[in-house]
Length: 165
Image 1: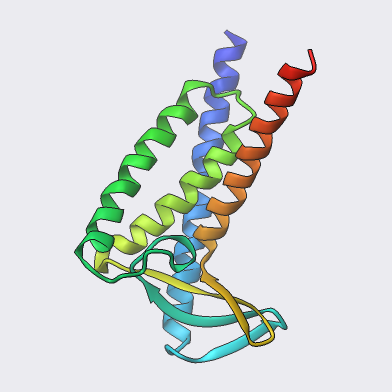
Image 2: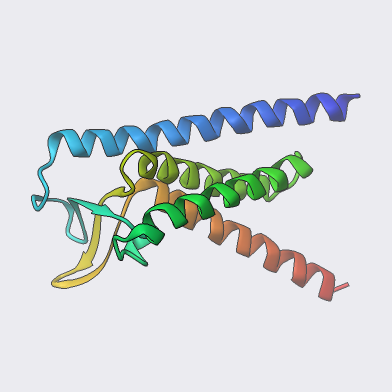
């Protein structure tokens, strides 16, 4: 009984966290679109600038071909991914991986909601070193990346624990 109550609490807290992270992502995109013109660059720190761009591809402007597939195909793939991740998230509410899955879900939801109305995602964080460009991303992309790294590390830890027994 207590485990069931604990899992319900974890679900509520998890969904609340996901909602808050999605809100933060969408608000940041709204704010940048409202106050920054396309092509304008504002240095935040020497390696990170604010630069407004629109991306029809996926994280870090990969597959940015601006065609029907990238616009709607990625939207459909994203929805399928969210359904699958939600299934994994609900399967074991006390799993250590749920934090990483919640981060990935938050990022995927933020980008899908952004893409839904016009087929593109708003990117605005431009990472570079000097004149060498690396990528332009948004907060949702950061959620996805952080969540994926944590998920991968937790899987590695599981593998090492099994092999050391």
